[in-house]
Length: 327
Ligand code: ATP
Picture 1 (cartoon, rainbow, N blue to C red):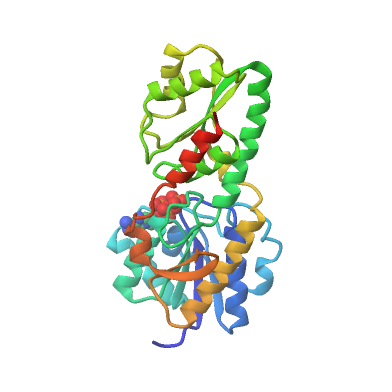
Picture 2: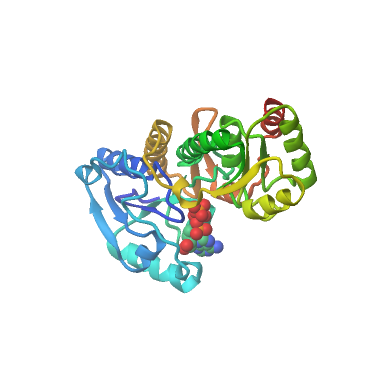
């Protein structure tokens, strides 16, 4: 393989706290190792629209502490077509970009895998998504910050729940993965946690809430992942209200506030480690891999596995523990 001269880095899909720390690490590692770096604005859309910006070590100063992504992100329908990818690749060639470090979720990886398969450009991807739903990494970039944001919100909601003897249903992000809900539920002392991976019967939930009320709980918080099969927090609240009126019932949908905010120390370090490792890997000749953290060690996983392997399971032990600890 010809030696890599110019690396393109971009963020794609949903933004996640820690992406900027990661971009900074990619840029500075590449420059340190004698490579040029181009930032591609708005992910695949920017590749098609030629939004290329030469980066130097100073261009990433003062961004490690910022949420969101300074490179901007986008969802790009055109890149899903073979014509769109060809256009993007031609632009990369024109710009002299001969390797890519994409930062995003499984959709971003699928696009990178296709582009690399079709045109042979080396890609080493970084898992940047708050969902923590990718095989090959114990943590994805942004998940820790998002969970802390959720816990902060739960703590505030608990103040008002306790003051008014209320039952709150709090909906958090997670269409397919209940990771945020489960961890925030444990850390926030939730009475019940409803997840996409496991069906919860409303009658069982009511039974649990009744037990709590009988044991003199003055307020309760139930965490619901948006992908829970009961149809979201408003639906669950409505159905519970029909049979259980011990508390005043309220619903809070946390929504997009879970995405933003100052990245936690963990996400800054993780982003730095992953960005650094991705550049080293791509220069060493690796391609079609994802950089991940497993057992506190940086490891590479084939992109195909990162995208398609769903063998990692819901942490049933945590869920069981949460049920016991909320008696
Ligand atoms: P998040 O987990 O935050 O949603 P993501 O990377 O999974 O991040 P997507 O919107 O699914 O977010 O994907 C980002 C972009 O990747 C898409 O807008 C599209 O340009 C490209 N992409 C996704 N799926 C494919 C595909 N099957 N083929 C080609 N490109 C794709």
